[in-house]
Length: 312
Image (cartoon, rainbow, N blue to C red; front, side, top):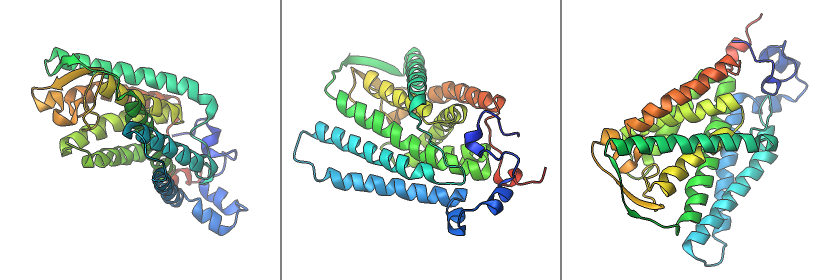
């Protein structure tokens, strides 16, 4: 598949060269060329991501005593700030084709569209669940968990998970194995990561793999930055948890209403929440597939490393 001419940042300015030609003609020292190889760069980026999170955890222990919700919010913001600094200062400079997937100029549009899609999509999931009788509002809630949910399950989860799975893993797996390999591998890893959540089952992880993998992976492939998937992910979590009081990936939430899920697990998702239901999967797949198809139509799919290196 040809490299799209409007995406020179993905492939550098010497579009006529194969990666091998660019590698052998590169004036950088050998150690740097090795470090910048896609899979090596990915391992280094993951290590930096983990170290930044660990450092944020240590700094959080130095905070003075305060209310639990306030402490959780401050620790979350500290983690985001530190990881973002490491990403902007170091991770964006790694690889054969360094790039920043969090450009400030793309944030307003990407976040707005992502937030709108995530909100409307989960409203549709809840609406259909209510029609099938598996979602019921049983009382009023309140806003006492608003800050905690906004920082923890919304900003922190969306930022950290999208930066790791799309901004690091997808980016360099794609650069090595191509877009399709990156989509399959990161979707599988994303689903597997959720098996450790409360109330998780292999069925719920499979649902996350299919719906979130396609949806968020497709958003990244289409936008070619992290703002769209981050906005979508954040709104998805906030809408289901705080607005509709649905468990978020197995975690019980306290929302604006008191609600309960009942009926067949296939439709309700059980204790894990509607993310594990066929309703969420069936609604998410067409949207994810549409974004992937649109990305392909616009020439934004990346061929594997070895295909880019074939003469001619």
